[in-house]
Image 1: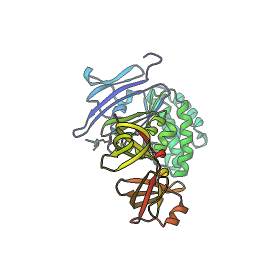
Image 2: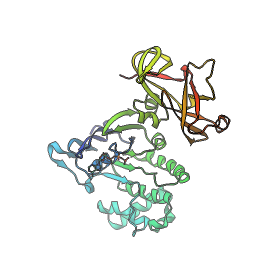
Image 3: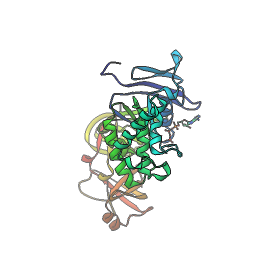
Image 4: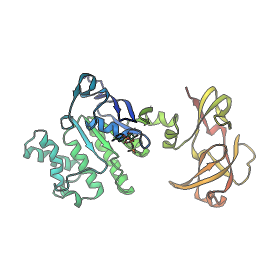
Length: 356
Ligand SMILES: Nc1ncnc2c1ncn2[C@@H]1O[C@H](COP(=O)(O)OP(=O)(O)OP(=O)(O)O)[C@@H](O)[C@H]1O
């Protein structure tokens, strides 16, 4: 491996009968990549292939210059010989071992003697702020503490690759906030590569340097959060970053959407484009608004959900759209499912970009 090259260099091809994962994946030293995708996209399959719990059907997996799996060359490395640490969603701590012995387990298996392994475990628990909990069994720990023990256990083997499978999913909202911040610190300090599998865009945005989004086993978008947020290319990605997204054909500032509806945008294009605008750009009115907005249409409310301090209103009509309104505005408009309203979006608040 050259110093500048990726630590993880993989092309994960896994054939599970009706499902094929085909995922090129590289991660540099110290880099955190988030793998996102809807249910059934293949995230767990990718994680299991990396961990050595599922063999590759084709492709390759090289970590820190070592070829761990290469079916074309009949190379295969069992899980316990891979320089990989894993934090599972449910942590999977050994219930009968203390926090200290849970963390010491990996180093011990990798050849440290009992004293050295326990010393290393104590160091890691110290870094996680868990020194006074070292003797506790997992059931005597809070969710956040158990999460940190699981992270200490994964990092104690000094893995070249750290795999995190929905690491915050089991925590309540408050603990999640604190634990996310702590996890961020530990990931920043981790010199190896990290792959974070998550459903939660916030985890991905806070914790990852780069996102890889898969759908149905294939990469649909990859890049920094900023580039993906600016130009989502699928419905899933648009929802993930909280945008309304449509595809259509542009002729200057006019865009005819695939289902015939027309929108005016601030950008000029010709040909196939995506149009996106945030729910906060959609204004709702009791009747047809007059004046400035270039895009107005009648819609019917299908859902009202709390979204941060606002309400997110789902609407159907000539296009499906989400709108964010303040609770005061919602009360004034008496918004409720089934109610007809008018929706308006200023051309300047929409963004169009080429679909090719
Ligand atoms: N043991 C199995 N044998 C065959 N196919 C499987 C098996 N487990 C999962 N699959 C299929 O592989 C595909 C990917 O599943 P996977 O669990 O990797 O997705 P995921 O992105 O992790 O989903 P989720 O977010 O729901 O956990 C799915 O179509 C699933 O039905």
